[in-house]
Every structure is written in C-alpha cells, then in structure tokens.
Image 1: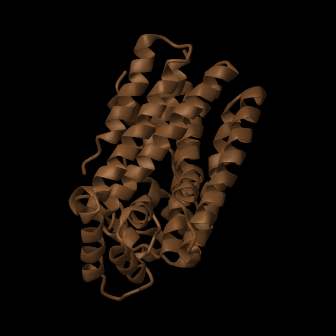
Image 2: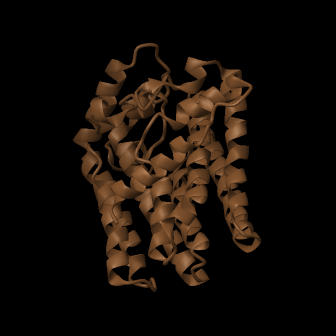
Length: 323
C-alpha cells in the first residue's frame, strides 16, 4: 500500500470529524490549522506501522489523529513563540485571530489529542498514553532548549542534535511506535521502529534547516531565511563556526547578534558565508548519515522484506522533498 493511500484514508477520517463546536472562537482555529494541509507525515507513519505489524491500519486511525492533533498544537504555540507570520503559506493562528485565542485553542488541541486513545482497550490505551506523555514532555524540553539556545553562546553541535531529537524526532519515532502498539507488536519490534523513526526524524529536521536557508519559497511554505532572521543556531550556523576562518566566524557572530527590521542583506551575507564554507554539502552528508542509520535498524526488525522495503521507501520519499 502506498503513502498516498494512507494520506487519503487519513484525510477522509480527519474531515469526517466535526471540529467546529461551541464556542466557535475556541474550535474554529483548531479546524483552521488542521485543514492547512502538509504531507501528514506523522499520522501516515502510525497507519503504516500498524499495517506492517499485521493490524488493519484503519484500527490505528484514532492514534494517528492524536499524533496529528498534537503536532499541530505544537505548531500553534511555536508560531506564537517565534512570532511567525506564516504557516504553510497562510496566516498563522495568532495572526488570523489573536494570541489569547491561539493559546487557548492550542490547549484544547492537547486535550483532544489524549481523547482519541479512549478508542482502545485498557492495555493498549495505557501503553499509548504512557508513550504520548513521555513524548509530549520531551517536545516541551526540546522547545525550551531551542529558546535557551538563542541567548547561549556555548551551543555545540551535540547540544543542537539533542535539542532537535527532543523537539522533532521523538514525535516521528512515537508516531511509528504507536502504530506498533495498536498492532500489539512485541516490545523489541516496537523499540526498533522507534529507533528507525528517531534517526529518520533527525535527518528530516536537518533537511528542514537546509531548506530554511536554501529552499525554494514557492514549495517550502515558510519564509526562507527565517532561521537566519531569528538568529537560530542551527546545524548550518554551528558547522560554519566550526569550519570557518577567523574573519568569517567573526562576521557570522556579528550578524547573529542583530535583530533587524529589514533582513534581506543579512540573509544574503549569511548564506554567502555558508556557501563559501561548503555548508550545503556538509549538512547534506549529515542528512545521508542519519538516513543510513535509520535504514540499518530495519535489518534487525522481525517483519517481511517487503515491509522493510516499505519503510525504506517512505524514508527515501521523505528525504526527496523539493530543495
């Protein structure tokens, strides 16, 4: 079964839900963010994982929806914290409504995400809820580290990789493990598919960092150069500091101390420093390394060769986003 089929089935399930209840001001933003599109990567993973471990993937739809609602909740709150004007090319929730509405609607989404586990029998419910709580807290840890890094001057590449593991990868990993839990796979397989997701998630986030600077604004859906404007110490910035000569390092640090009204020149300057020091190549190599680590986990998994290939194909599809 291909990725498109999982996407379509998930979207059918998503649109069958009546999100807009009373009070409308609480639920309309929930409906808005959930309809904004995107590839629905995380719920697709939950459905695929349940399928791979021998369960009718439709049984995993409530868990998949939980993952997607939680993911979108984090986006609503992240956009407030980042003061981001756009999400997938459309106004962010706090821009379209206001900050208070976005905070409260986000809170409601977190609670809704938990509710979908009530569709499962107690033993499965308990495992899902336990994984979900652990993951949700880790995502908060990652977000806090991300904020802390803005003012810290001693952030290392290891620190950064730990932060994106928490902020992004654990949710990709949990989405896969939830499918395994719904399918009642054994613990070893559930842990292996989690590790597969963890490494794939790291590759995915590094690619997101790459696209933020070197992506096409038409296909990226977010403002290109956003990380540079925000002075985010991404892998690109930290790697440039590691390999650059003294002058370039000094200039980069100087540029990252600035918060400007008009950023086009800053984006050009930083991007040029990155290109001169082969940062696009270095980050691409890192992306490939984590993708490879993910694929190596598959060899230990107790599933058919065709199912392993399915996961591999998904990884390759994910890494072939338009750059």
